[in-house]
Length: 305
Image 1 (cartoon, helix red, strand yellow):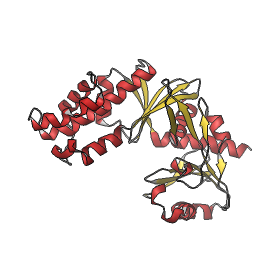
Image 2 (image 1 turned 120 degrees about the vertical axis):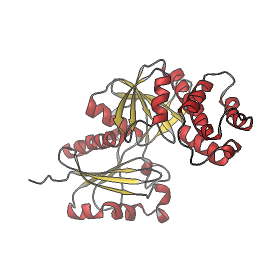
Image 3 (image 1 turned 180 degrees about the horizontal axis):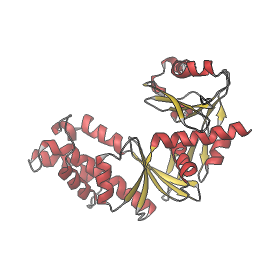
Image 4 (image 1 turned 180 degrees about the vertical axis):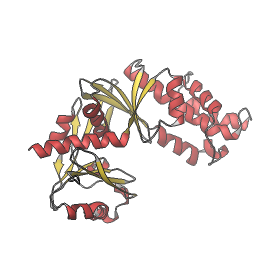
């Protein structure tokens, strides 16, 4: 007997839209992916873009609920959803969902979270809270440290099933900017492959005194003085940035020896080596499955109302 779809889960970020049709137990029944992130939607026609992505599902199941998370709820998105103050749990996130007005059917957007790190710096996130909430609800993880590597890596501290606080490191964005738009990248080949020896040297450089702004210039000096081969310079730069990220996270959250790492597929080779270098054991979690688990928890709540 065919399963009856229960909701449409939409992860709508800056660069892409991913929609998943979920069945009666939260299992995927169908998937659609489009390169239409919120910044690429013509004239802000989010309703039209959603129709392009999953209009067939909505026509086939007119009463189906659509649940969205990510940057679609930002100021640049469809409609701004609130930032909840940390600490907060999945129940608080679900209770603070907003409905999209003036559309056919039920369409909800998950809220984001705001917090302050131990040093008082303000923090915000959208989308990652749904992924972490999915791990908490689906896997029973009530305490621990999470890492979501990426353009803006997130380190998230969970305590008593609540997102207690978190910190953002713009590691991926800094690597792209420095490699592609700074003098440091002039000696680097855009097609360079990962070089473990150079990457490890970069990690070790991250431990040294003087601050990141001082240490980064060595990526150019080593190449100019021919003390490192040009194919290794990008990996050396990456090692410095990822090493600085991990050192910063350890300074904020103590010497946690285990981190839940949310990724699509396997943990990337650079981060895997960096975690080993820092003596951190990892528990891999599938980022997409975790996001779907978080949205499914919200869908079940709506069904119970």
